[in-house]
Structure formats: structure tokens, C-alpha cells
Length: 317
Image (tube, rainbow, N blue to C red):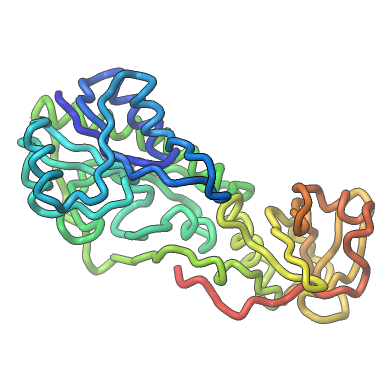
């Protein structure tokens, strides 16, 4: 089949590779190039780079709602459009173009976690499983009929990065199965149960400050669900510390929430929380490289009795 692929970040890379190997990818739509954080060099996103490396035409329209873009899609005349984390809402005029429809790879088990941060939400909320959904695209956000779903367990040690990479691979495999079913006419579709719909909004930086007055489990999931991006953080002595991983520690200490109540060589600083303590295992002090909790203790970056800040905003997931 002639496939027009729309995607931008790393999550979409496994999917385009799988489709390019098994079908005819006639073009790529991806978001416009942006300078890096320092505002100097432009680094192509992984989907654009894949297209350039494999002689697939790449298109980067500022808007998919203009007459010019709509006419371009009509001219390309794809049998089907595949969207994987493109980052743009498509107008009905584009949705109506391909004869065999337009489908999306979504990184949750819909109808749960429609929206922008489903992988973060699954870990932060302590879910025991996640998965991908291949669905039809309709005008309403993530509301199309379900074609296929594949589940995967969320392990106790999984970080956002771990689950992201696993879902990207699972998504590509499930997508190929769906495409083949559409091509040979064996596809079936199931409507989403609207009574079970939940939404997740984009995560804001100010929502990522750690609430040390919460339970061990809640903080543990919060930190790993933001690792590596956008990363949980806390302030101590007016310096920001990005915290990537902690270990649950059942011992209850006297002191205040967020207080460094013990320093254990070979392990790290111990921070008091609501129902126990947490050992900081991976951390990045302001203007320093990522280090272990043990390195933090050995380097005297943190002293006994110092206190981490407690966040004022809570992520709504």
C-alpha cells in the first residue's frame, strides 16, 4: 500500500522503519525544524533524518489546515495515512482524503489516557499494565474506533524511558499487523466505551517539583514516571536538584518531610516522607553531571538536616 507517514519524535521511529521495510512509504510529514535549546544549531528530528537517509520525500508544512497542504496530500494520493506522534491536529479535509482511512498509534490502552502524556500518566498513577492502541483518526481527540490493542506489564523498576521504548517497539509491530489487515480486508473495528474515557494534559515544568509529604509509593512512581523527561526536581539551599531515581526505605525517622535524615555511604542520602523514607539513587545537582546518591554523599553535596523543598502544584493525570 501507498502510505503517507506523519510523525516527529523518537517514539515514531520504530513504526516508520517497520512500514518502510514492508510497504511503500511515499512521503513523510513532520514538524518544522527548530533550533536546539541554545538557539544555534538545528538538529533534524529522527523522522526527518530517517526520510533523508532513505530517500523518502519529507514535507514540513507550518500548518496542515491550509489549502496548499490539503492539495499536497491529495496530489500524493496515499492509500492510507499513518500518524504516530505527529504533534498536529488534522482537519477533516485531510482525514477524508485516503481511500483506506487514516490511523494512529496511541501509547495507551484507550479509552484510558487520551491526550498528551499517556506514558507518564501510566507510571505516575501506579498502573500495572499499559499498551498501545491502533485506531481510526476522527475529529475528536483520540476518540476513533479501535482496530488493535497490545498490552504490556509495567514493571516495578520501569522508568518513563523504559516504557516509552518498549511501547514504541510494540506499537510498530501492532501497526504493521493493522496495516496488513486493512490491506487484505480482514480488519474489524470496535467503538470506544465513552463511560471509561480519561484525559491527560501536557505536563508543565512547575508540576514536576516533588511533594515529599506524599507516600513512598506515590513519590517513587512520580520520580520514575518523569525520568528522564521532563524530570522531577527539588530545591535545597536555593539550588535545584533533578532527581531521576529513588529507592523505597521502610524506616521511619523523626524530622520534617523533605529533610535529609540520614547519610548512608555506598547508598545515598535518606529523605523523610509521609510513611517512611526514600534513598536518593540518581540525581543531578544544579550545573553538575548526573551522579549516584553515593557520589552525592561522598562529595558532601548534601548535609544531614538539610531540607528539600515541597512542591506547590500537583500534576493532574
